[in-house]
Image: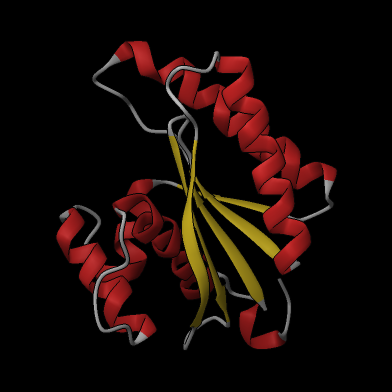
Length: 162
């Protein structure tokens, strides 16, 4: 099973693609960046088309995306939510099932500790995928963590389900 993990944002969207569930293999990771000088609608268009391109290029079986959590900076919550909306739309338009996970679920799945620090999660991404170093930037590592989370906690994986 191919899992596309997404860490949503509007300046940077992290993505990570893995194969498998309990013993995953990394296929690719990276980020979609949108220039600050563009308007929000232009940035959202870049995000939508980039996610659609990833889906068409890698043909994931599922998409795992991080749910939004409370932001201290109230000015960024709305644009991030809008970016997350176009990501969900791109997935839906391309008929890819969507699974959503909270930061607590992701941390719990990777480290066994729901309140784990970011460095602990990144270390586990590196370890689980057998990488020599933590993927950079952080948004890409976070996206891989979301994908791994789906593989770790989805009860249908051992039955070849999604």
